[in-house]
Length: 75
Image 1: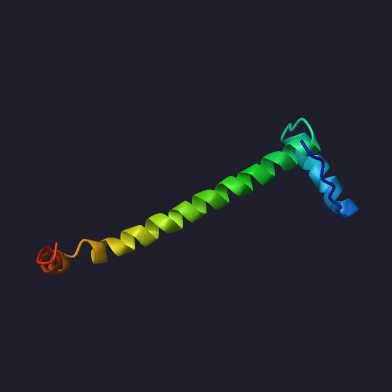
Image 2: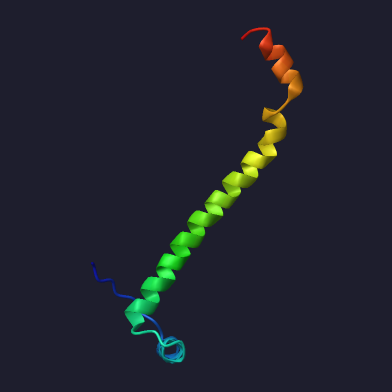
């Protein structure tokens, strides 16, 4: 595992520490690691969601009976 360093204003560090205590996270690292993983996973899910939407919108074009009739002459 690699280590990364981030800098935050003192005010935000205090807010972060309060939040970590309130939510019972074992450490700042664990909280930040979870936050990053959640963001990466939600980004993947969002991309999949857009792909599904695109596919559904293309169904009308792909499932066109007229095209089937025309292509059946050539296939």
